[in-house]
Amino acid sequence: MSNGQPGSGRRLRVGVIFGGRSGEHEVSLLSAASVMAALDERRFEVVPIAINRAGRWLAGPAALETLRREATLLPSGAMRALAASPAVNGPREAIEIGLLPDPSRRGVVQLSNPSSPAAALGTLDVVFPVLHGPFGEDGTIQGLLELADLPYVGAGVLGSAVGMDKVAMKDLFRAHGLPVMDYLPVSRRAFERDPGATAADLLAKLPLPLFVKPANLGSSVGISKVRAPAELLPALRRASVYDRRLIAEAAAQDAREIECSVLGNEDPTASVAGEIISSREFYDYHAKYLDEGSQLIVPADLPPPVVAEVQDLAVRAFRALDCAGMARVDFFVGRHDGRVVVNELNTIPGFTSISMYPKMWQASGLPYTDLLTKLIDLALERHADRRRSRTSYSPLEEPYGGGRGC
Image (cartoon, rainbow, N blue to C red):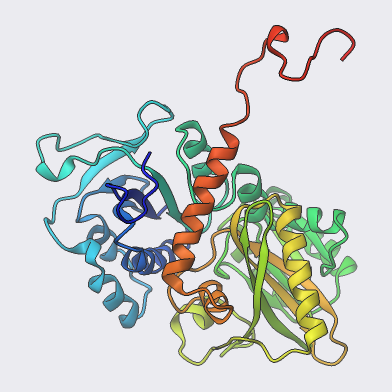
């Protein structure tokens, strides 16, 4: 495999996967357009791979254009960013493909239009999943890439799955001694069986105001803030549209929303902290992607001891979930007492050039293009380390003696 360095004779072929069957489909498109436009063309050859809303995998120069037409919720500026991406140039034909769990193939397999000259996709050296939410950020595609023996950017199956499920994530944070708000899991089936009893139980155990969220979704999709008892049932119904597992958690009162980026594998490091000032009551989907009034302040104006605590907790959260490559960790910091609480961890954060994850690294001295290169290098490093592990066993071949009684 080429190392992808200038002068090595071949650029690394990077499969950028985007779209997906998720409520965060549109966000993925914008992130992917930014990633593909910024990858270092001296080292990398981009292979765009789109997954449409129905779950079909599409490649070829028309892949991004195919999904651009589905981006109904993105503002006009985001549409222009997609249209300006070099990945949409060339033939308009989209090629249907698949990824086989076969290590000998090392790439995608064409399923349609076999005579198309644009269909010669070849093998992939590394994959950059830019998929947010279920079927992309939850360990499913990571498992497929593991079976295919392809290096990929970001957390593995375990970190991705736990990082996607807010209940499991907070359970692990609490087990590792990380400070979190009070929370309770909610089963969609239990809620549908007896909505009144479910609501009464939550109100008896959690103070108002509280938040109700789908356990396995991001970008604030399906989230409601509940200020009065009458608002709880509608909030539970809204969240249950998106997932079979829900979470209700106490709201952090009079707190600032602080974020911190983490980068690395075995020895992760934290960036400077950033602050979100929402244009709405809380940082929901509209405030993140549709309104223009939200502010992203990097670096955050925080006392140095609070910044140090945020950075320490970010790295501890990263390690608690066995993450790799990247993660963005979100916090609440009390305005008056400075108390720091971990909210959640995102294994595939938003990745436009103005998203918080790259902005915090930019402010830490690592530009966007160099950050992308570092993430791919980390993916290759982690894959090489995983391949050191044996996948077969024989008592006669124990590397350190083995034998009876061991």
